Length: 294
Image 1 (cartoon, helix red, strand yellow):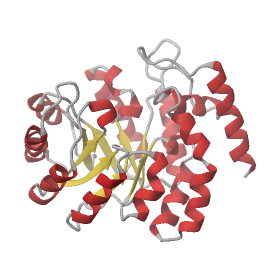
Image 2 (image 1 turned 180 degrees about the horizontal axis):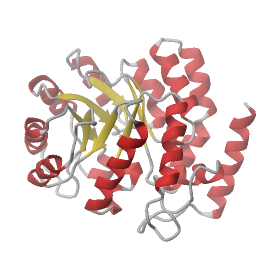
Image 3 (image 1 turned 45 degrees about the horizontal axis):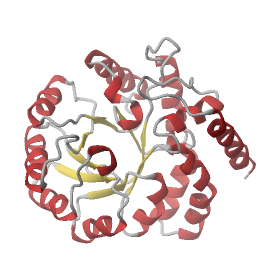
Image 4 (image 1 turned 90 degrees about the vertical axis):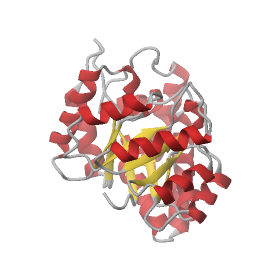
């Protein structure tokens, strides 16, 4: 996978009421996002509640998604952690023949310094048989991959092809875009910043919203990439409240509530995550009604 341009979607992992994986619902989500025009799918990300899946379940989800997608769009697998050697071992245990790239999150909890972050990703990139995308999400990881560290990795590790930037720091994101090599993609990891990141020179987004509204997110991204900013802005503004609701009570509680309203999947999450409250669900229902009228 040489370019990450366009709309990626970090898909959910639907669960049944007994907390087992609902593969039929997962199939419906996959069909919805592909029909909606997304450019690639990310499986086993934060939105997929990967931290609550067993090792066997992770492999089962990847196998199912590979079969369901059937080569229609590229697939990216989330494989990360805070133990570098364990991440390398996990990568070795997957059949990555149908996977275009690995998305690897910054090490969480143990708070490495910038030198440690560089060595962590350099080691993963050295051993990974497919390209690697860095995932910077300080709000979850407890550490930030600085612009300088990201650029050092981009310029010195040929197998690192991009970064999913979810720091929310546009100054940092623009520094990366300014200093990156040509073949390195900067992706928004925040639906609210899709338009600003692309307008600054980013390549696209890995979206949560696209689970529920893939066609709208794809249209937004395509317009932004064509520099049709007026049309892109109209779509971004139309979905502002919806994006706020995605994260009002945590991700993926918001998007699972939306997919439940749209009759795509159940509203079940695994502990410690729980469904959104009744007031938030009411707001989500009203927001969906409003965008449906537009």
